[in-house]
Length: 225
Image (cartoon, rainbow, N blue to C red; front, side, top):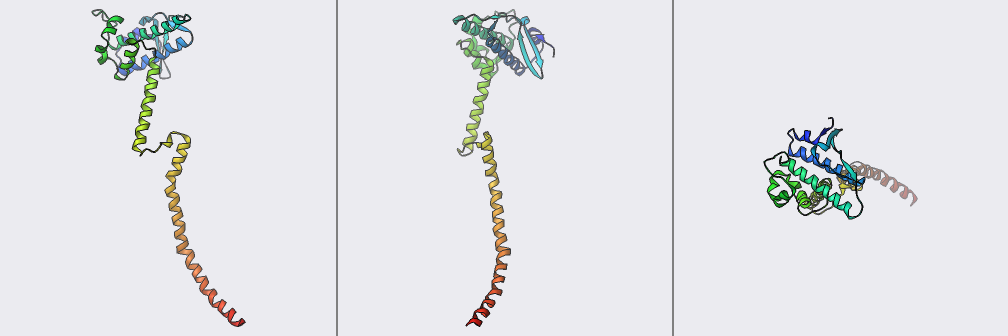
């Protein structure tokens, strides 16, 4: 898809999951902007471009400036994150274009919990931390940490269901050990078959050979006496 403004993007219907995907891409773009020493000066929907490359969305901020030094730098970065969150909540709630309601940062901060039905349940705590409690965290980092936490919880749950034994398959060494353990029953079966072969075929042959040798030994020792 060719690059369009965020305003043009919002003029079409998008599901909550589609909006969430775009906002994660926007958060990643803001994080990169800060890492390169810049901050966004204009979050107007006409000043933000949305594109798609290899099935992945990306966002470009048209208006940026160099970050100041010292404490002002951190304050500017935090203000960027809060402004971005305000914009995203407004898009989720379809209130940025609703002129009948005075949707302002102060109004949102004072009535934040009332907006929970409009926001993705898994991201509500992120927006509240950033906008109400002034936490400085990017949505892209929050989503990544949440996913990592969910994987850890899943592994812990599987470990409990596995009788407390460690899940060795999570590492190459663990997978190799698990494959060896899985093959152990087959190796035991092979050994059992080998034992059965000895008793079934080899042992009668030994008995037959001894039956021939015993009379021969008797004749030899008889002639010597």
